[in-house]
Length: 109
Image (tube, rainbow, N blue to C red; front, side, top):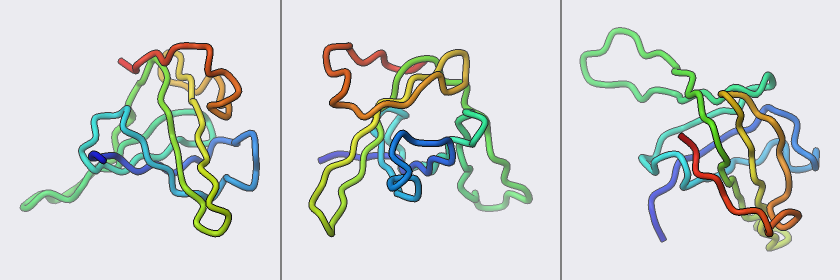
């Protein structure tokens, strides 16, 4: 068990039934941050309010590489895992992880 970040995916997933899941990932630093992958494929970090800060801004995180996102469905006890490939800060593709296990994970930069 470790620390993870949470992620919402607005970008279309291969299985529309998973679109509204709240995913987790350990590939973005694991600081309990909140992220969203927007419909246009950009990754956004949602800033946490800091004491004394007047304005908090979301930050675009230009990732280049792969991240794994996952969730566990309590009702069916199914583990859902996707690999998201970012190229120059935009989603190139999203696949169920078990579909391409022969490819090594390219950690994001």
